Structures are given as C-alpha cells and as structure tokens.
Image (cartoon, rainbow, N blue to C red; front, side, top):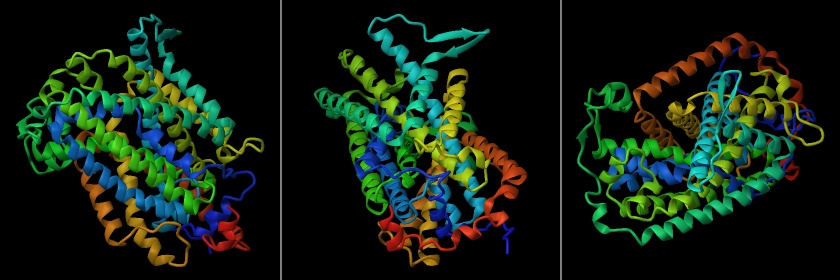
Length: 510
C-alpha cells in the first residue's frame, strides 16, 4: 500500500539500500582526520578575525567571551546529536536524511530546504567576501588590479566567480583529492591564527576587560525589525549591551560554528562511519572552540570595546592598528584569504550533497543525482551548484542576508536534536557508533537552546525566513509531494534482501 501522507517516513533500511545504487552512489574515502579538518576548515574562516570583534563592539563588550561559550555549548549539544545520527545512518543529506527517518517527509523537505538556504547563502557570502579581501590584500601589498569587469554593461566581480569555478572543478574530480587540498589550506591558516593570537597577547591590558558585561544602553538607531524577535514580541525598547546584548552576541557568533552540520552531509563518503564521524566532528569542534575563545580574549584585551565600536567596521586588524601594530594586517589578510578558500570548498561540497540526497529521493528532479562512473561524484549537480553560487556572489549584495544562514542552521539543529529521542524509541535495534549521554534530557535541552538562539535573531530575519519557507511549501505541493519515490512506492522493492541498517553485515561493507 502506497502511503500518501505528508508525514510518511523513509525506512532506515531503504536509505542504506539507496547508497548502493550504482548510478547514484558515492565512494567512502574520508577518514576521521579528513572530517575533523573539514569541520575546522569551514568554521575557521574570515569570521575568526571579525565576528568576535563585531559582537564585542556592537552587542556584548568583553562579555562576548561568554557569548562564545554559550554558542559553543549549544553547538556541542547539537553536534553530539548529529554524531549519533550520522554514525547510525551514515548517508548523504545530514539533517534532511535524519528527519526523513524520524519525523516524516514534509518535515524532511523543509529541513532540506533550510539546509539549501544555509549553504547556498553561506557559499555565496564567503565567495563575495573572498573577492573583497582579495582586493584588500592587493592594496596592502601595493598591487593594483581591478576586481570588477564589465560584461555587456553588467558589473561582475571576477574574484568570487574564479574561486567558485576553481573549487567546483576540484570537487567534481573527486572528494578525496579535495580533502587533501583542504588539509593543506587548513593547517596553514590555523598556524597563522596561532601566530596572531600569540602576538596579540603581548598587547593585552587587564583594564580593557572592565566592565566585563557593559550596562544596557538604548540603541536609537535600531528599528523594531532590527532587534531580536524576543525583544520585539515582548515590547522591549531596542538596546545594546547588557544581558540582551550578551544573548544577541551568542546568536551572532553562532555563525562561527555552522560548519559542523556540513561535515555530517558527507557521512556517505566516510570510511568506517561508526567511528570516524563522531571522532571527526567532535574533535574539530573542540579545536575550533579553543581558537575562537583565544582570539576573542585577545581582541577584547588589546583595546576597549568602545574603541572597536567607534571604528565602524571592527575586526582583529582594527585592534592591531589601534595599538600601533598595523603590520599584522598583511598577515591577517593572508590568513583570511586562505580561511575563506577552504570554507568555500566545504560549503560547496555540503550544498551539493544535500541536493543530491533530496534528488535521489525524488523530492527534486532525479536526473541531477546521477554520479560519474569514473569519479563517483555528482558532476552535473556540482557544476550546476557552482554556477548558481558564482552568479549570486558575483552579481548581488548577498552579504545583506548573512543572518539567514544562522536561522537556517539553527532550524536544522532543532529538528536533529528532537529527532534523537524519537529514533531511540522507534528503532532501538540500530547499532550506534556514538550515543548522546543522558538522553532524552540532553537532546531536548539542545533543541530548546537552539530555539532560544533563534528567537534572539532579528525580526527582519524571521520575516525573510518565513518568505523562504512559503516558497518551499509551493515547491513541495507543486512538485515534490507527487514525485516523491516514497509516494510512488518505488522504495518497496529496494527493501527486500537488504541487511538491516546498522547491522554487522552493513557495517562490514563500509
């Protein structure tokens, strides 16, 4: 009997069987090191040199250190949930795949739609900033090269287009090769980050940490739509600093941790996923948390948060300039370019894998999920994604939508967190390479914490998010509901003769 319900769930066995489709399969080539590097690569980008300074200047003052701790704890809770899911169901698609197995198709569709929003905008924003920082680097080193070209009267920024094209080609050729290149870039940029941290500590002054949490101040320049949704709904006047600023800062710096859900999208390409996925994800998160907190301690200790706020566009470079060490700008510019390069590559990979999983299930056109017999990558899809990202980054002001990335990520975190107790109850028989401790308490706490961070994003972001969800609903009703393979009963035959997902037979084949 074919299930017509929008809450129909895709059996775990079926998801595992799909990964063996010779026309739509991915090679398991990634180790725990590759996954950890991937997480560090996507989390340590330009943000490590700017997001802490921005949050300190405009929201939390030195208390931004606590903002990072809050964000990292929330992320750690959610990432443990990802690690359990990915080690239990090591299939491409991340939160989309997990939600399909636990909460049903319509929920899975919307979380997949949110992941597309997150990774598409993140990739475009990063590519855009790569072009901006390339121009800055040219200026710092005295090189004069125009970064904009005119094609038929249209101004195109060539930097984002070139870098997206380069890594689209690399990813199309093979995931393993991309991981090796990514490792080199990541090791170099972590080294640069450590150098900056050590140098910055020589300029730290204890008085700059006082007051640690500045008293709340009115923010007359902010409209109601520019303040957190919670503050808007509760009728609070727009403010900055204080406890509200601390929490708003946590919601902002959460952007620094979005990379680890991207790692879960590559679960189908991990060797021995029951072991490598938890180790890779959690190890990478630990390193990133330490790096971010150290950078934040340095930037808030070097100069007063009020001086950072007065600079207009605060960053770690701003702090070095204010203490008379402007030479550090050149080192930081190189670190940023390398950082953004590896971030972009991982986001392009993650975006493609989410669309790949949704296409393989029929919720998007099945034709785009075909993989190359030679490279075992979805080449056509990878190229298509690259073209879309390059056009958005090269032709639009996508940086205005940065907070949309956060809300897309957090919505995925919420459902993955709540999905853990559901899968524990419905499928206790599955072998789990990692188990979230104290379930269901910790997964539920994780989901609630992510919801809290969501309502501390701006009201305008929520309005834009609502529009995106409405567009997704139209596509689901018009196309995905009718073309779903689950709706057509195409998965029934695939289940016969397959070993139980998570059984010893399945694990041995990975």
